[in-house]
Structure formats: C-alpha cells, structure tokens
Image (cartoon, rainbow, N blue to C red; front, side):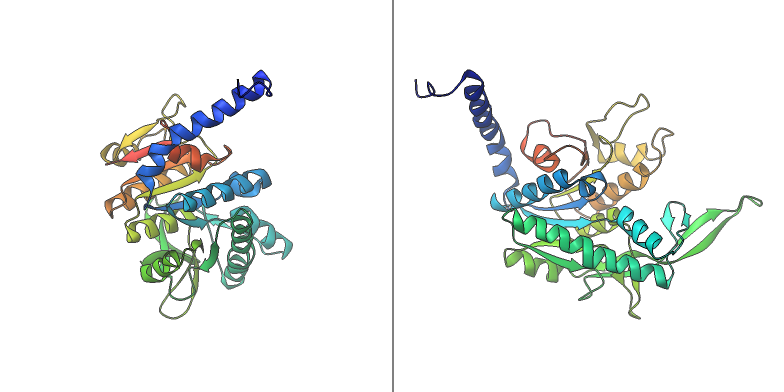
Length: 303
C-alpha cells in the first residue's frame, strides 16, 4: 500500500483531511463570488490563537473566490485605554456614553490599534487586507443616536443624549467595491461621520448589518461569545425563518445583547441580505465551519 510508511493514526488523519476537503467542495462552489460581511469581536478577537485562525479563515475565503468584508469591535480594549487615561465610563441601556475625550480614545483604539492589528494578521496569513475607518472618505455617514429610557419615578419614556454615539445613515458602497475590485479585503473600524465632521462611535454589530444591507451582501456573520440563539431550555436553535426571527425578539428568553443582534440580522435581510448567522467565535475556524460544512454552526436566519 502507498500508506505503508505511515502509522495507522497518521493514515486516519490524512484520510480525514481528504474527506473534509471533499465535503467542503460543494460549499466552496456555492459561495464563490459571494460578498460576505463578518462582524469580528468578543473572545475571538482577544485570544491570539483564535485571532490567528480567524485571519486564516478570511484569507481562505478570498482564495476560493469569496469577497469577505470584516467589521470589528473593540469594547474591552477601549475600556482598558479609558481606564489608563482615568476617563470614567458610564453606560445607558448597554451603550457607552461618549463625550469628546472618550470619542478620541475610541477612534484611536479602533482605527489606529485594533484595525492595524487585524490587517497585519490577515496579511501575515497570506491575505491582502486594507484598513478602513468609517469616519474617513465618507465611508460611513452617521447621525447622533438618541435612546428612549424609562424614568424610574414617572415611568415615562424620555429621549436621552448619550454623546458621540451614532447610528449609520449611508454607506459609500463604491469606495468599498473599489477595494474589493483591487483584490483587497476591507477591514472596517465602526466609526461614522456626520455633515459637520463630527465622529461617532457605532455599535459594531449595527455597523456590520447596515454595511451588509447597503451592499446587498449574500451573507452576514456575527461572531459572538455564545453558541448562537438559545431557546427557553438553553439549547441552540440551529435555524430560523426571517418571520420567526422577527417574532422571537420579544420572547422572555431572548435577553441581553442577543436582542439587538437578532434585530441587526432581521434589518439586514429586509434590505437584501440573503442569509445571516449568529455563531460562536470562541470555536477555532468558526467561519470556515459555518461556510464549508454541511450543518454549519450557530443559528442561521433565512428567508
């Protein structure tokens, strides 16, 4: 036999590798030519090994004919930088109140530190990434976000100004497409800019979903620190229709940060995104497992 020089365990390993490639082939063909937006954050971004596997996944996507676009977060790194500068953080409804001093730190961390690190990692893995900041080249136009908060005494909801926190209003899609045409992988920091030149911090999930919708991307992937959407028994819901996803948002067992993630997926699909998936970024090569295996991972929402 040709494998006589290999141990049984080595033979099993290579046979498994070959089987994996064979399984992946139809999915590679299916996704070839697709534009896929990936929101990258959480534990996947903070762990060096996971960061390396993510970079390899993005490079592989590009090599097999997919056009990946990465939108990244940076909450923990921002919090650490603010702490080092003795700037206190206040949160309302899970959103950081962002004054002028804070937004400067946010911009520095997102655009100059994290973005550059992700670009370097992808390039070292054989990709051709380029760092972009949403508040440059009118890439991501934004307006001030005001949120409704219920007054504890009167029980009346009122609008609260949380500073330089924005909501996206327009994407310079041509600018992104030019970089894709040049064979580059856009890595976007979720910052926005208004007509007066003010910069805004934008939630990374929101930015990724909005960009995916404006580009009418084939798919949106949101990497999280949980397996996906869990039901009332804490079991993974592997798939949902768009209608079911719209309804499940109001269920009591959908708590914390999962509600806005589902809403982001729903809104993106209403704007033309074909499918969205909320998946566990703590799993090595989670992106490849989702795209190129029969069952995928996480919770997929489809029309």
